Length: 368
Ligand code: GDP
Image 1 (cartoon, helix red, strand yellow):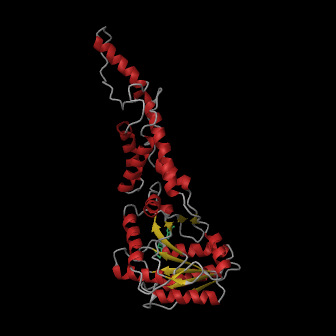
Image 2 (cartoon, helix red, strand yellow):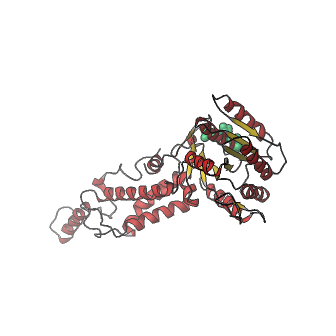
Image 3 (cartoon, protein in one colour):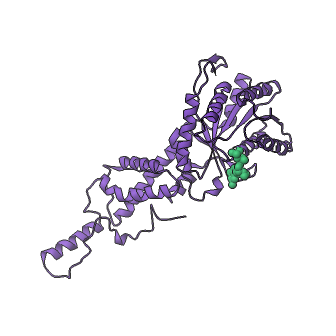
């Protein structure tokens, strides 16, 4: 991990951002000598800068922070946007004075950046899934449904199984719907998870599957009906991994979501994906918006059928977070691009390796 790029590590005795003339004349009594010495003193005390912060004064410090964010996997465009926001927040404020003005300026920038990052990462709505599930189960007398989407190999099925494990621990009866009817082995992989999780004491979990090559949207619909008829509380729908540019597969995903109107569409994304996350998210959201099949109604608030409501990704599971070290910037890409929260962070390959996102830790890692 790099340190000291934003704060600390500088020797302020050498605050050089003011452009010292560097050449101290031998102490003769000429006017030039006195003026140079005075300039030195003024710069050392931060008195030669304007009284308020300007974009020009902030620029070198912001550039250091921007570079650091990019090194931590924040996409270039977003890093530039963040530093611009910090600049706007600080411009016009009193410029730091005193013995170490540059060090103080770095601190000011770091604190402002902390605020900007925390605002982006902090969920705008509740991410208490259990509470939301219980509310829906009670008031609408039906199972709660979550669809897991994402590109190939990101850890969709594994993290679906981790969510199932967490739900079982919380007394929920879980039906897993095998709607990846595309990749051979996908159904068997879920069967193994269900077998493992069934061994938990008191667990009620089952797999709903119809094999391969069938219409995934129809299987998900059947699974929901089955869950309602057999007393399951939650349906977790696994979908085929797909690249964001694969139009036929993106269309079929949009159909699955439109036909089934799940309570949540969770995007599973790899923590190390970096710049590519933007493209993935935008294209998944665009597909969900653009490919709502004609004549498909949504589930209205009271469960009634209403006009189709295009859905979007409701939130994220950030997988393989244990593999990124300090390159945690994808957390910012996902929340910044969509405004939606990170529900969970995958931190390993066992069922228990699922955590809530720690906003403070991510901000600290980005800025340390
Ligand atoms: P899918 O194709 O998206 O369903 O991906 P899988 O669930 O099959 O997972 C692909 C690989 O990623 C497997 O080897 C998983 O064990 C691994 N994996 C999933 N989540 C995590 C995680 O949070 N951390 C680590 N280190 N590996 C993970």
